[in-house]
Figure 1 (cartoon, one colour):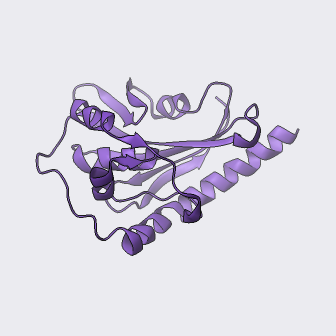
Figure 2 (cartoon, helix red, strand yellow):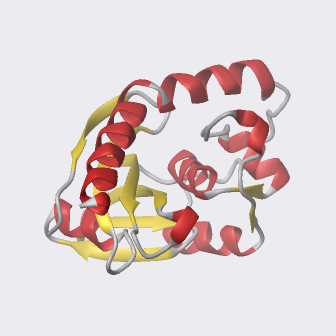
Length: 184
């Protein structure tokens, strides 16, 4: 019963945060703290292979505790520092790849993980004319998918409870769609 209540609470918290806080907070953070980052590659667009090659040079680093909660840093910052967490990897891929492309966040609850029971991951969702829907992130390249929800449900770890997802625009971080999820 405890896990059902925690999963229900996390579904709502993750959905509401992704809908109303994540994008606006990230835009504010970029404006206040990341204006100095201007450098960016000129040889655009990049292929998925080139994005993954660049990712191999980068280091996954968790956001600092003083940020209150997670923010999506500017791709220019990630390009310069080559450090960030999954949202920076996804935002960088979104900044250099061809459209159509969207940032997607997926959150889950894992009752077996003790204090680390709540998790999430950000990916770039994009479309290839020849093969359909794909996702790319610091975890790698996955696809093709014939169904959008198959992609969403593949992201949370096995035996965890999917809680919410959100899709947002790459450039302005505006929320497009999202919802609370149920177990598949």
